[in-house]
Length: 238
Image (cartoon, rainbow, N blue to C red; front, side, top):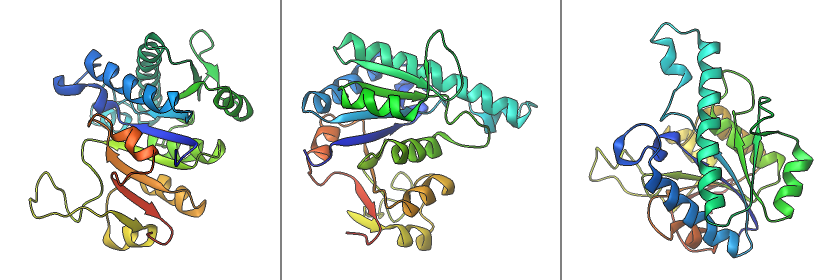
């Protein structure tokens, strides 16, 4: 396999499936089976998942909820999603550990870097919930930071499109996909991949990012095995 240790970032909205909210059991099963393929091939997998299918801190401000309070509510939403993902994966024979950025000892281990790395070395899939435990930081930033901390080879951002395009492919039919692009080009072209804090963390630590379609069966395995899937972002764009 091309990558030995990966950090997979999934959006909360992706878990909602076609229903648009909550957690879709079919989507959970699909993701569990995709991850199982790469785990069975010997790849160490860590996962960060958002909470947008349940609650988003930024949206809470529009409802009169304090931003900090809303962000903590969003962190709890990610824990709910992480627990659902954990349950689905374990039902398919994947050994997992759920680690949280805030203490919820009844359901999660606290995040301890060395412990997380040890879990990965033992072949357990590690799911990171509750972000980094602080408001004003997105789950994209969590994914970048945790990937750096566990020394992952790459950040894989699973989306509903198959890479980074010159324009929004859902709005512009003439948009073309980049096979690979540099961090500087992303800045210069103003492409919206992930929030700027998360993106800059990856750039400063020379951590590649691949944006790909997680909903297409076999994409994750093909990507990790070295096939041309999605868009690769690196320092030199190669």
